[in-house]
Amino acid sequence: MRWLRIAVPVAAFAVVVGCAQEKKAAAPMSTEPHVMASDEVAAGRYIVRIAGCNDCHTPGFLENGEAVPEDQWLIGMPLGFRGPWGTTYPRNLRIKVSEVTADEFVAELKSRNTKPPMPWPSLHAMSDADLRAVYAYIKTLTPVGEQTPEYVPPDVEPTTPYFLFVPQMPAGAAPPAQ
Ligand code: HEC
Image (cartoon, rainbow, N blue to C red; front, side):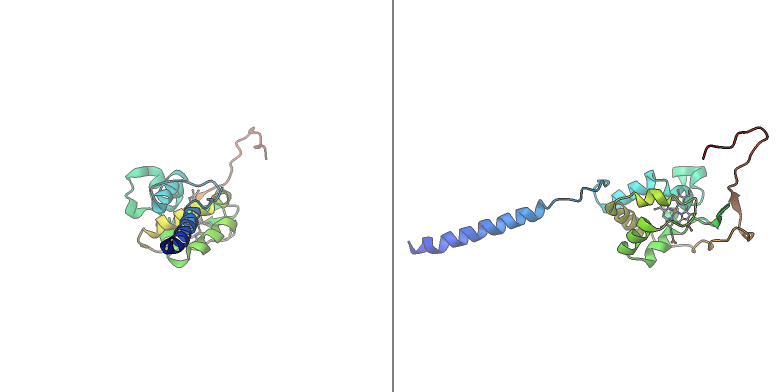
């Protein structure tokens, strides 16, 4: 029974290793909601599409929608949004992701709350996995163009074209509920 003395421990070892591997594969996933797609880049592209990032960060997207080729997506818009907060510009996100790591991107978008009309609160609500997917997708796009102009304070006249976001009050209109 000499062979048994060797075979039994070897078999037992194989079972233990097998279980360990099975455990690893079945490791509990984060319970945070996240988008599922064929891979991370596809998930990121899908989120960018449905979350409206192109509406502001891609020139001409609001007017022309899907007709704007993907090689121009997220290159930023030098057209300002001017309101009581000053004037802000949707940034060139390709340049942005070329300058930060995925961890830095996630940490910044989870906590940053600077100026309108960037929907910062919506980004805070995204799961880490979804923010990582957005980063991974943008990273596949070549960083082209220039960074958009820096923020202009409220009392300074911008030197670029801009939208004016100031509520108008026609005579007799009730002020909006706050
Ligand atoms: C309504 C317009 C609008 C939409 C929609 C929008 N953004 Fe923005 N985004 C801006 C503006 C304006 C800024 C500059 C804001 C500031 O200075 O606080 C900005 C800034 C950013 C920045 C900071 C870039 C830097 O250089 O630091 C990131 C990252 C970003 N947006 C990502 C996104 C993503 C991802 C989406 C889609 C989920 C999105 N944005 C949707 C307008 C928009």
